[in-house]
Length: 199
Ligand code: ADP
Ligand code: ZN
Image 1 (tube, rainbow, N blue to C red):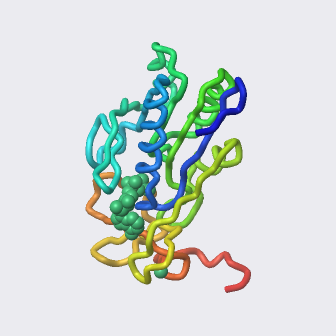
Image 2 (image 1 turned 120 degrees about the vertical axis):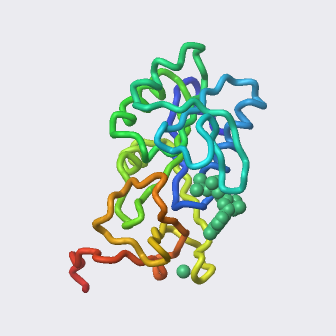
């Protein structure tokens, strides 16, 4: 897709849930494979929403991935010297993933990461902001707002059909809440602190 002479680089695919991040990551990985380049695909162990050893999109597309528990584990899984490293659901890793991505890009690898830019409260989702600042390439994708049909840039968390509270934990994988894509004006967070000077 991109080629910056002989150095590596970082690309970030981001946006809300259902915006097609996993689909786009899978598309890029397939093209790397067509080019007969070696690619290693990783995902955090925490994300078991569909399958433990695949990156799976909401449209059912999937590609094999290695689940890793901690960012450091990723380094020890690069024994066969890949040219490309892809990581899905990057928001579930700690900030330690940032120097690892930088290190791999410094070594000449193409590093493709996909993940949520913001959590359900609309707050930046660590470590994605840091990666956005450091990336050579960024693609922000939009979903479709389930309320009004506009482009959706946010992830709405619903508990029994009602907007979740700002005070809920950010990561609740496997809990019985659900999520939908929403636009700026339809997105709703209960108990959001009123820090805005215009409110
Ligand atoms: P992400 O990784 O960003 O959560 P996926 O790649 O897993 O997104 O899924 C994208 C697919 O989800 C779309 O191609 C479409 O088939 C489906 N989809 C379901 N709900 C929506 C929505 N509200 N807006 C856009 N796509 C949606
Ligand atoms: Zn809307």
